[in-house]
Image (cartoon, rainbow, N blue to C red; front, side, top):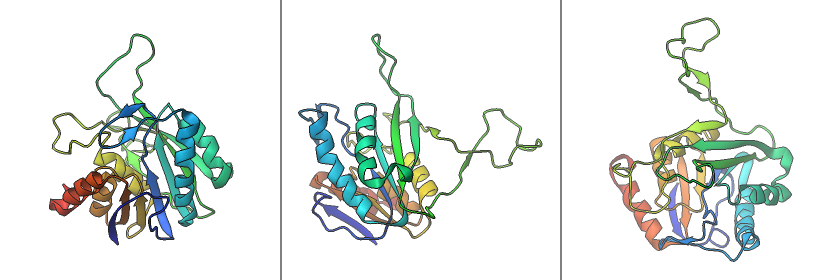
Length: 239
């Protein structure tokens, strides 16, 4: 299944038995990006909009399926409490920090250079694939106690933001790097699993899923987003 749908995830058709649902919704930034409006009256209005949409994804997860909600400092704490009401805090496993470098600095507070991914798994026997990355200390792979493939991944992910000159850029605001989507998919799903992204934007999740042998179901309320995703996915290797 490789499906792209224009619509609202709350009301559009949605298959059951999803293996991974990754949501990268608006962040309550107070900005109108043109492609989508991220302006809300207050945090209550924002959470009231997102919570039922996240719950619908949760309800359509297969047993052992994973839910990943990607937000930032503005709303992460509010959404964690809201989602726990239906996903159950016992099903919550990690708060993952995606750390990156990007332009901009502040003289009034510490520069905000990370997003947060909240992970819940439905029931028992959830999919979790151990991934490894290079050790911080070089040339230790063959020493006793060190794994030849590197250290096990932690809950802090250092993945670069997309460069302003990168060919990966589509011009879609808030586009995430394919490397981030690949890591999420590798950790939380298996080949041929069905992955849903209900706020798919430029289609990065679909590109990564296509490259990694997963099925995908992408949804976005903005027809231009779906058009961008379709164009990327029809290119060579999802480029």
